[in-house]
Length: 511
Image (tube, rainbow, N blue to C red; front, side, top):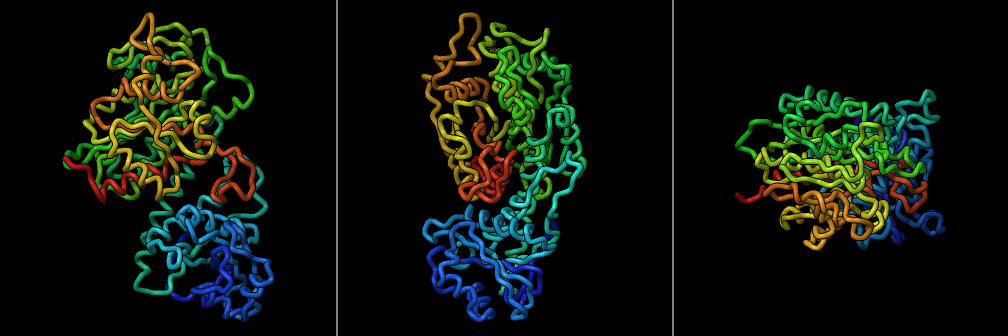
């Protein structure tokens, strides 16, 4: 989709559709909506007075100007209550408007910047949220379908800003929103792709493609032989059951720049998870193609980072493999040796994500990072604790790092919730035959998984995000589901990571 910014009044904009807004409970439209209402002879006000439009979040009302203004249609989108209004409500409104535009079959539409003015947000911030909501709201996974959708997506979207002096702010926000949202859509594609179209080799080829698009990017793909030489026995233990070759992807932005802060992003890349010998139930096993949601988020975020050209040394690590049952597969009771020499008794082969992340976290230390952040669809226990589609669980060894990620979460609208790293959890991982087990049992599973990973995180500040409840949207299309989400992959974590890194540039860590 083409994104443009135009200076002028929305009521004077010539387009197939223009979009204005209204807060819930407002009886007399003001601002741009008031200007359009006046041009329409009070038509919007009449709809409000009649109770036909209340401004509820995501509610829409369509008007036909009949020549009163240049636009062919006017869409009023509800923003919900002004009290507690958030950037996520801006994304929600923009997505609802975009989906209505597609339903109407328009090729082009224009909108004011929802959230600025009475919304209380700066123009750049609000414009970014509007563009993000628009692109995310129109997302559909169509790669493997022969039949085209009945209604194609709009081809052009324009943000209209009345004050020409403020157009550069809107343009900056629109560009940032487009980069972040399109990267999130890439991650959605990867999670939605069948496992035979998103093998570890496919992920490696994508990483190489991303690197080739930027002069600042370098990619190295380690083979199973390479990882064996590095003594990544934990990673290789999971990989040995699959006929698909495992890879360890290293994607670097600004490699060799010792003058820049180094941040390492680690993403779990299990491209299909059967549970291994500890086989999963057949129900919904097809969804296990999305067990690489963390890896997808890291690859997509690296693509966005390359486009923004952040002045940071960012390293993306994605250990990628399938977890399969076979005659060669690792078994419950086996002992694996990780890259740092720690031995791990395998209690469950379905607790494989932490095993591949263990070696990646050890490897991350060689970059001497200011911070390491890992993302993983790690535990069903986190979904039980926090719910599906509510928040990701966050564990951190460094309070300032956690605070940074929480601040980024507020802006990105991708919620996280801090959970404890109590030493008690580690006692649940005691093993008769090894240094620790890979599973602490049913109770406290989200905590024991994080405690396990901590044993492989170096002296660097470390943050673990368990995104198991956030990477795949299951809810039906109802008013309670944000309009920017559809069933399938959500791309969770991409916008969060990009915002986190942009904020780091604005306020680097001390020392």
